Length: 354
Image (cartoon, rainbow, N blue to C red; front, side, top):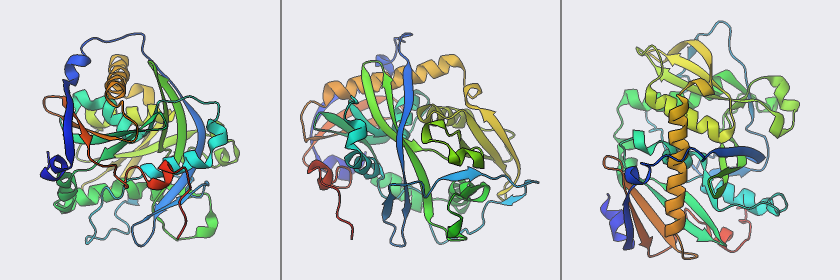
């Protein structure tokens, strides 16, 4: 764990080995949902700041070339390190303030994004260390992934090949899916993304969560209501492998399940990042049913533990997972982090646009 993280900690509140908590599998626990409630778009401007859009401006539809022969490195700049930028959790908080009517009759305990829920699901099969925060505001626990100084440094230290692979994962979306707003022409908004807002139930928990929705499967889907659109996730694996890895199968299944997506559009990239083969996979075939149940139980167990730990309002708790031994340590922090929980959300006032 980074020294910066330790210096900000007020006190350790508990430590638990998650592998022990997950030892007993509850066959009655299931993931109910997700129910689509709404959507938003966002992109990064030239100053690398997030621009939130309460609309479908980032919605895309699948438009596969025939034949498939794609230079996935189109537009690549070797001077830029591609990877995680500013936290995106405030987008969902803003949506919440803008859509109080939709939420007025809805109960939920947690506010989170699908990326972190995926980490909760798959931690038993991932040996990486990671950290997240939990803050109870007006009775709801807001969860955010925290990227450590070490993680940020690892992005800067990436090899050229690894940096290209990260770029291609995002760029592929732009190359095989078209934006609904054709008036944009060739204008490229950096990491232009369309997110859904969902409500799900698992065990005794109810979750309000947001997640990347990829693109709709056909152009005809664009005319349908959001809850009737058929979305697909665009994913890739790198040659010389003949198929995706078990880790990718776990990740793809979790993200798709949390967003209610049935199909993966899978691209194979050669060593030079040319793509000559794209196929479609059914999400339900990615992993065995028993593993799906493992993931649902793991998510329920982590949420149980977080809810029992985060008892004080307006206090920030950080949780650090040692991925190798599966030890989760909870800390009560000295201060709230404005980057994770903006003051405008606490004050229930929408941010003033610059």
